[in-house]
Image 1 (cartoon, helix red, strand yellow):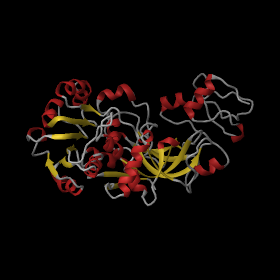
Image 2 (tube, rainbow, N blue to C red):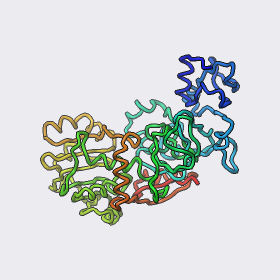
Image 3 (cartoon, rainbow, N blue to C red):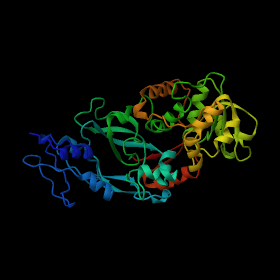
Image 4 (cartoon, rainbow, N blue to C red):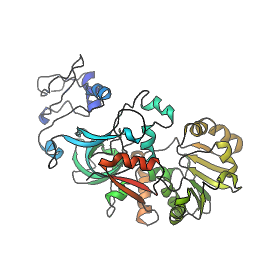
Length: 413
């Protein structure tokens, strides 16, 4: 019998544990009303006050749930302590060095959640932006003094280990990839857990490593080449990709070429040949040339890490041209947010921050299109370097220093 109370409902949403299933014989450490931890009690004859989320936000830990039966067997791996896994975590803002790998409680899937054994994850600029944070006003969203969420990593590929009772799309053993951006991060770990909508099946023939490069970066690249109302680049369009060699840029170059555009890539000196190998028709070395001052005009500019003002960029756009920025330092981002609409109306050139972006889980059509482009050989994931989970700091530092030519992977197996 279920005792329906607001506290039970809140506990289910916070912990992901179905309070109405006594046959699971689930034991859950919860918090009592004074903030102390009470002993796990079986569902029968007790009203569970599931306030574990409060404890998690204060202490930065996930309350431990210990199911029995098939779910418990799925949690175990040879040579590991029961219910424990390695994961990258952080509890304050700062450089990559604040991240550490430690033993944490293994998540347990409930409801529509899937537990995925991570085979590969990839580093994104968004991971580093969240560490700083960058821009600084992001603290208003993710925590003023310290991050509310301690997990790290968003792009992931792996194998479904176990599933909650409401999962309908996957079964244990399925190969999946996904973006944890909207689901609390946690890709840089041995296991990760999220609602099934966070994941998609990996296409046959695609490796875990290639799949891990796609969910965040490739979706951003694809969506940066169209506007919210559907306008997109056309065959013969002159497209410039500023930041063509990092996480998003290589995908943007290849997708634009697949759409029939004439593509100019912007990068630093040592990456010029790499960007040319992606198919760029022209490459600008930004250490020697400022593209906003060359006199060239473009139909579409994608800026993956903005360092130019909108006033400077507008001179590089043709009449009716489009400028889309995906991120950058505080002032350019504020300018894109505040001045973008004004300049767009005054100059007749759509300019601004890509704020309508739809993440991987909400863009099935875009995921399908990416799969088609890859299957046709028009887009290929580019992997620069692989790091074990134990070297997560080195991997983050490598990306933060702007060294990669393509994606950097975290290998957990």
